[in-house]
Image (cartoon, rainbow, N blue to C red; front, side, top):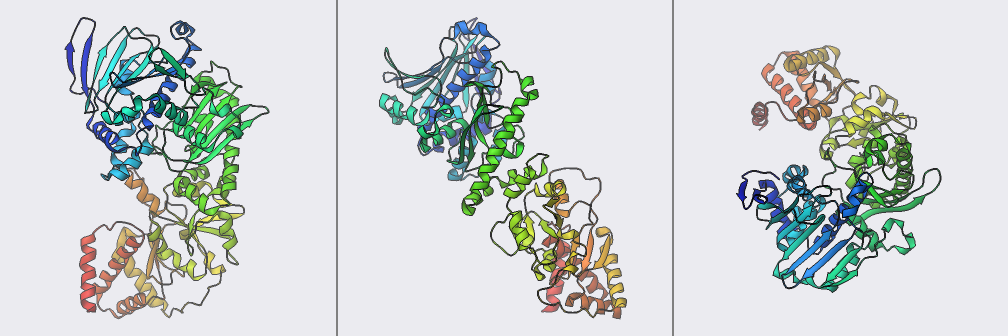
Length: 631
């Protein structure tokens, strides 16, 4: 949100009202939220009750260091008040509350830093955008699905100033100071006519039991002077697994993650021993929107004896498992644990080790069902492979769980599957990296491997360029780029013999010399190769230098490269085009045509590599001349 175009109206010495406009991008998102976010808009109540519960959690934690606030709080609770006379539904909590800065900057998730990135991903197709917003999570703003105006009355603990925030969701909101407000927050929904069902007590009871029964604070339905607690008010993770239904697990997952899919994996267990803790963890079935945002918080909430401590503790989960969400509750930390203490205590390291072990063990079990496991891999494989790159103690377990595309098969395979497919005489695991799977499958560098029936891993994720530099062998098999196979292919028999090359040394030397002259500093070297069977030429980089794909990735991301990788041009001496050019050069004929042919072949090789041509116009002009001559 911004404070652009502020209009300030003085109403009294103590009371001011400010009208502030949302940024254009927030208004756009809000419009989609209001009109097309959920197929069942009842989810708004879950979001608002979850926010109220978080506010109570935060204040209870604040009381550990500021006990003087207790005299103003009373027992924590959430009160839901339907009022048919005014067509309003009010959700009140006596939690931490908000000050002016909170209201402007942090009221709802849309206004946070992810909104700009979110906008980039909007397609204009409302159905697709609805799914995207569902992953993004909208929290407070889901209220506008059922209300044509929302009023928030709030006062932050430890302050004397209260504020009233109000908006009709039409691009602006107002702020007014009101010091008479009690501690906490009341969200007042001025319901649309078609949303009158949410004023019915029986409907409210049903929704709370469906979506928010696990909330550990009492949720009270207030009808006139009558008050009724309508949730069980016990933390779900503390209950016996046998007493929890799949639907309750699903509702809890959606509440803590603000997601709208079903969990792909639910892991609920109690660890007892040196460190005692309870874990209730989930792997989503769809990746959250902000999975790759650098400021994304950890998805794990830490509790100490059911007291909420923090939802931003990176030390609880390795980065490659950042898609895991849920709750960890332990008695082995002090209630007044500080952020600095959390960073230093060995307790978190032991809990982290335990939960990672459980997650990887469960993934190993699920991986036996290939079709089911592939769904997980399609969603999170790109992140999970970071575990091969990051230094950690479980890298071998991570490697066993990784899956890859491979030549000669449409199915994903593991490292173990690859080793089982290795040919007699093959010592290494080979891979080829690039931006696109189809482009890789047609890369000339694969031809020599295909001729020998050697499988090659096809790596298309950006992280692949990095983990292969640190995780360099599986078991006793080295992981080697096809470009750096050197003389490895000579040790492995061809499935059928190749034609012999009758290109003599004199013709060969003249051809290689002409190629180097025509291409100049585009290449560092020209050499013959036995790795090509169908293509006339191909490009490689020397071992130890940056691959062409990694170089393109870095340039595309605006990173400075000290020097470009050397490019070696490999020539197939059996190809008829190479023979024809060698003959013409030896005879001193058609010099312009030969030079053009070399340039066209080089540009074709760049295309096969997935690289943009430096001069598409010149390439097209030369190619057209060859087509015309052929016709």
